[in-house]
Length: 207
Ligand SMILES: [Zn+2]
Image (cartoon, rainbow, N blue to C red; front, side):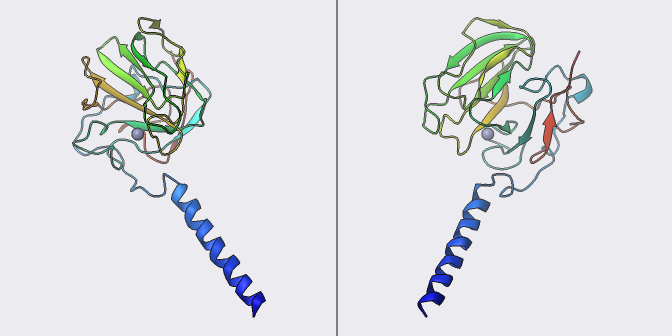
């Protein structure tokens, strides 16, 4: 009888562990969406934007455009993209531009949201959020070329798991509640409605 009880306890513990593992899979919990409905997406083949990481690297997408709260219509992060990355992963400039803002004092999994804001040539403000502590490799006023190092990703700002939250706003409007804009990326596989949740995108060589 005692042996049977021990066996049941072990099975119950294993069941709990499985649930915990499922719960930690951020992608499987969400409804997969293929871009936002009724939105004009810039042609990805001629997009001025590069993936925000070095050529040859591949990362999987957590939430993307209109794929689950807070990346939903009516929210500032409607058009944000979460790149699933370990803490300390190098992120790079998606476009030529000027660094407008740097915050890097926050600890991972605590409430200060470290970020770098890059203003590009068309007035988009590209935000690299949840960077790790002291993870910025640029300073306010720096000019960056596309592909230049920006910093290291992390989980600051109460991120529930390590990722880069990448979002474009416009015309200086980058403090919440900003308005986000749909952008596509030219140096990866086809993304006519931008990047899709759960898919993995390699940064390809670009011109
Ligand atoms: Zn996000």
